[in-house]
Image (cartoon, rainbow, N blue to C red; front, side, top):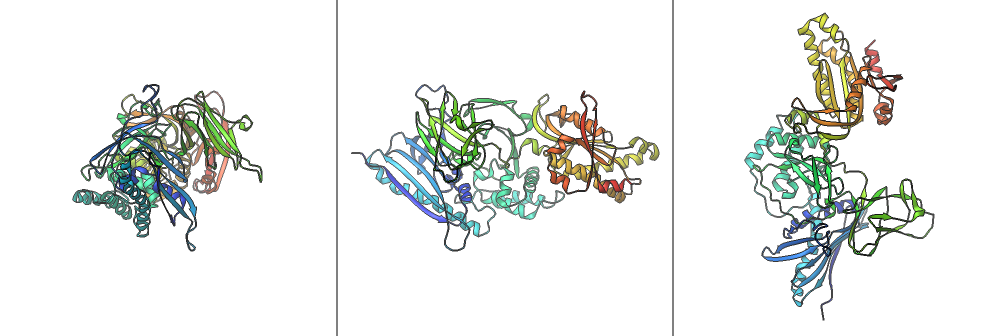
Length: 634
């Protein structure tokens, strides 16, 4: 008679929010390496050509238990519901254990006393023995379950001690070239203008000296800034300057737009592939600048060598945009305890169809209702009575039931619609002046063109520059024009943008956000007269400014990254309508801007209609004039 399944479970309550516990424990690669589990070699997904009986979602895995005993198993995809639970199943090839399910569950809890809301963490392992020898492994399984909770204890202890990085790391100190690191970090406190903040340098040094290998490869500066409680752009600036000092190397990661994980990388923009293929999703994609190219950083090998070992490949934080993921066997139904806080899309991995789920209204006092969503013939369908123009409405208080009506296994994923804000995309970083200054060689390959779905442009020109040269002479006039470029450069840099190029007395600037471009344009008009007074420029210079945004094409021109397309042309045409001392933009663009950018200033808004050069139809524009600019112009 075979042994009965063995359940080992432990639970503890901690004084931290559920969301914090999820972020800590759902990074399973870091968790496994920190608690001392062995690294794992995973096969690629078997894919649709693996044969009729192969499961394309299952990976072959192997490791060495205790560093010497070879172990092989099949690893199934993780199941999870964000901030509630996750589990993974492993079926072993030989050995004393046939299969094992490992996971955690989180429940809100109120700790003793008036502390902040807490969380109860349940860690468990359910194993099916294959032979009586399995009893010798019970102690090790129990220790692994306990180690997960000890990991939480260590985290809270580090947090209470005020560590910048409270997440526990593996025991033992890594080999760091302290002399090189000290010299190169020292440059950050003096070389940049302004210098990098000393507290950020100290936090970075601690991570380099004590962090695990995974914490020093593929770093997202915005995610680290959130962990440190620091300004995101300040931390990005830290990494940019640390890279030029030789502390880090930058990498451009090509992200799959479906599963949203890195699929290729390049050390320069010029080496980005025009297309890439995701073996998990089974689809090829074009590269673009917005979401498919992301800037990440890894510690320089001269400072510290890192190993590329993997300890877990399918944990929830690998794809944090997925609210819930469920592996369904053929003809299996799976209830899902998930309340919808906003719209999500339901899709099946390796399939193109998506079903949008939106929160609906629930009848007061009504009982819980099961809403069955069925996957068949490559599509998800739900009750027709709940379908609308915006997708399927899920009444409040309902429970979803996922049904696999096919003869094969599927992996169902419910995903957030928005991409993570913690990514530093190529579209964003290449519009920063400091990046262009520090990495002027970062350009695309000759002839390569990448789409940018959204970029904002500011065009500026000097009014009356011809009379300026005639009245003052070339040398004096050029001095004023050159200094005015510095004025614009500083204002644009403060606003989060960059100067793309100068054209005579004019400037073309790019911004990642429309609000930053518009805010900078208004500040230019507010401040130019006072700046001229400080510079002894009399009469003051008058700026003509226009703003527009939309899609563009990024490519290399004259050895610099440049933008082309209809949006750029229209931005230049809009700027031509400026009279000086004002900011001109299309009326529809003003309506798309955050009104707080406008509301912070006393503005005169003058609508007008005109025909722009190169366009047949008349365009509705607005002319914005700030009170300060109007007074300055007399």
